Length: 391
Picture (cartoon, helix red, strand yellow):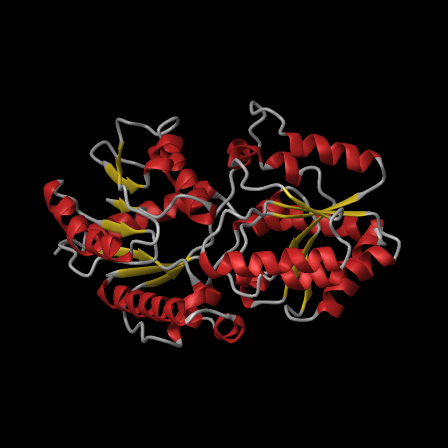
């Protein structure tokens, strides 16, 4: 059983879509998979999932109903495991089941619970603070109860190891992958935003791209503050994002403050907010951009970094352990809190076509490291390893 009850958007959905697409290639004749997903995700997955191998079960939880989710993880999941006589539980949401009747693999996927940078820069209400602390405690309890713990990066494994002793428990870092065939879906219709980008490029604009929903750790504010210096250096620029106000709570307050600052700086014509974007059409944006920027100061992985490199995009990233681990010399780095360093790095890259070409070459080479096929093959080996531990 794969518990993906919260995989409704972003990296969690990207992960699930690609793993489920690869599973049939590595499953044996007696293997079966039961996957718990949100109803919205069920509609997406149902179009390509092998129904003879994979059974999708919707969890109709309500966003923000934490007690409902806790009850499902610790009572509903164990009941389903027993009903379906499952050999292994793969908790891919970052939180495990504390009452698991079979061996459990836990994928830890949220670094914010363990990041000092996030805690130092987060401005939140008392209620949000206590919710985050409770989630951190639950995450640590999940690590203790799991038989195998997986991490998207070795940097995350090391950071979690500073908070809890992993001991002899298998702790496996595995980079997520990329599938060229699935990503470059030429059958999808070209979106309007791609048509707008074509027009802006014809007018002489350079395109800087970021693919992310708004969150404090995404660090959009540093990029926004750096843009006047970039534009004033003679660069005609469009900063294309997938930002949307479709967010909740304190994040929306920060988002609105950022937009107010955009107006104060006169950047309304520079920042382009495309809103939530169909994964199957993202390639239309990546293939039209000149530079990809990844300013996040806390990430466990960063699918867009890999997608950008695999599309041959020059990458500018905040200087974090995760970004360095993923990109190596295929990115230019700036201190995450430094507006001046961000601006200077962008100016150097935008004003040097030769450097952009060199960074494209490095990105393409580094992108070869990431494969959903290889990832899923190793994941199946871990499933079988866990099954051998059957309680």
